[in-house]
Image (tube, rainbow, N blue to C red):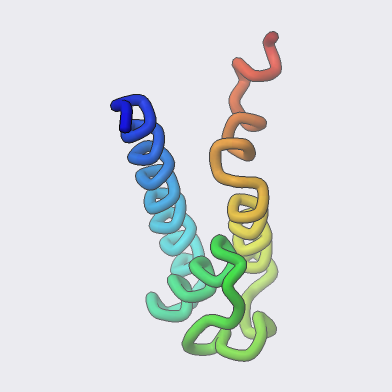
Length: 95
């Protein structure tokens, strides 16, 4: 396997984990506990289904701000992280 492939996979994994951590802290800032916040973000970014804690059945207990964060994390998971992040990069729109 070439080094370019290894670096690309490592970069994707690093951004994926980094975004999961950032989104988890943002969810914790909305008032959720750590387990609930992480499981809600993990369920949304992976499109995996239900989470743990108060989001085990549905997201009704999440604030409107938290739902916005989770919608963004679903977009990250569905559209792939790099695709969505490139859209928000100013140099993409200058070309």
